[in-house]
Amino acid sequence: MPGALRRQPTNKNCMSQFTHHHIAVFLLTFFSYSLLHASRKTFSNVKVSISSQWTPSCLNDSALNLEPYELWNSSHLFPDEKEATLFLGTLDTIFLFSYAVGLFVSGIVGDRLNMRWVLSFGMCSSAVVVFVFGTVTEWLHFYNKWFYCSLWIVNGLLQSTGWPCVVAVMGNWFGKAGRGFVFGLWSACASVGNIIGAFLASSVLQYGYEYAFLVTASVQFAGGIIVFFGLVISPREVDLPDVDKEVDGKGEEDAREPLIGGNDNENEDDDDPNYSIQAADLSSSSRNVNNELQPQAIGFFQACCLPGVMLYSLAYACLKLVNYSFFFWLPFYLSSKFKWKEAEADQLSIWYDVGGIIGGTIQGLISDMLQKRAPVLACSLILAVACLFGYSRSPDSKPINAFLMALTGCFIGGPSNMISSAISADLGRQEMVKGSSEALATVTGIVDGTGSIGAALGQYLVSLIQENLGWMWDFYFFILMISLTVVFITPLLVKEVSMLLEARRLRRLTG
Image: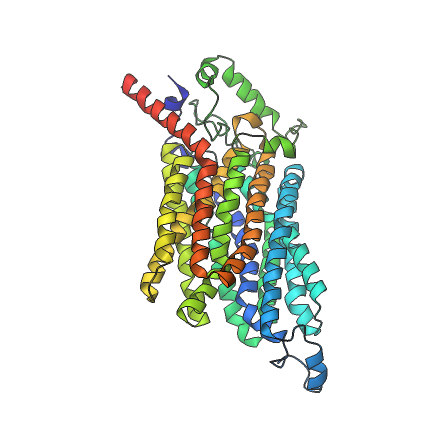
């Protein structure tokens, strides 16, 4: 029987493979990236306080009382809050560009070194940089634009170690069977990190913005220590079978099966009596036990040439531009358009993250049932266009705005979470990699790095369009980017829809 019909894993078999190690890996990777995202959210939440502190319009409450005001006034960075806010936006762009460059490098490094060490080093080092940026400089009353820029470049590079490593570790532990649902639920880590960052910052902001950085950095540093001693990066380290091993003698869905379709001779390969022997040899060759050789990590250009990697990378560049624009600009948009208080706008913007969590989980589950990702993405993105058009015309009503915002987050944040997590893991474990898990971090770095370049460019374009044309044209720009996302995944969509129709035809013939 054709492989498309035979490889239908049951949820029962999938769930029966989970152990306490799987739960520990899920939680450790989830909260490690949540803490990295929390530090970014902290910076966004205290921008108003930082802007006021860097301008002479406001005295520094933490400064020594004996210090003359004239001397203190001369040490400020900017003459007014407008220039200070512009510099804060420049820091966002600098961070995203350095983060994008770091993702390409971190993916390659993660595949060649122990990912536990790389992730722990990135978390602890980033925590130190955030502590120096927001706390030490304020305690010492040292303000320098070039120093801030240098620190934020380093912070972007260090934080880039997080996503490729956590996705690769999750890909090592969770096979393609059920991966869409598991990764859809797990990818809520970024949204949870935003909530954690907002809570930590708001709880101590009354004492000064430097304490918000202090608390966030301390928690992140502690998380890095826990990851170093507690994270198990592969089932082989605890003598568990790899995710692409066969279970109970029955053919489990091949975790290395290409996401975008498969070879035309797939059926012939499945019927080949040497097929299972070759797969077993490949799996056994990846063991690092009893002095057996570890497979060589895949090269950067080899990873770029894997089926679907570049198309999904370009699609994610357009999609992440829209997603991160909501992340950075949504509270400001609500405050400027509806004249709502800043605290109310911050609280209301959480509904976008809630929608992303729900959308990523549901869409991942549906893609598991179909065993195809592109059709689910395309349907969600088409609905996202309608949601963007509706949200741009939201009335001055908080309940209606929150509802439309959650719908928009569901159909934009959900696909964004799928591409950056489940689909990246699928691409890094497809058949052409030949069983080597050393492609996971590299592929994830390529996809997310390309997406971050798009996000970095978007922050400048959004502010430029808003200043010259108004907010409505920003929404038109978002609709254009979503449409381009659909265009980039269209070749994958056509192929996967054809496979679904062929599988349906074969089921009718055999049923």
